Length: 194
Image (cartoon, rainbow, N blue to C red; front, side, top):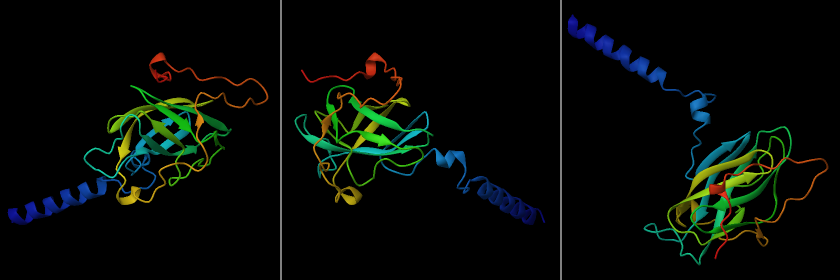
């Protein structure tokens, strides 16, 4: 009888364990862990999802040489009730990013597509690159952006954006009324190539 009781207890433990693993689509733990290969970050209602640089074919070292250029991909989503703007993307440890153009974020919409680069990076070394995305109103978010090899789901992506990239140091267009500027700590400041 005790073997039967142990079997029932084990079945109850397994059932309880299965019930405790959340499959609820509204579970905050699941919502805050997007299932993608890129970097993810949030700042004041703006979400950066699946940010990555597109590297070469080799999986051993997908990062390009310092002189090489890599397309920067990221999906930008606004959960704010007013427009915002991606002003710049800066790179720690050397390198630059030039955005395709102003990336405007409308309220409660995705501003970019996962299959189109938002800019070009150059002078990048390594497989993970510390980058800071700075938004006009929401502020700045820092992430370790991976360099992905051009294979699998990344093989068919364009290696450069449509249109010519513009320097990220270009001031954003003025809107009517005062616009507060985000404060970016000195360690996140843009480093210009020497």
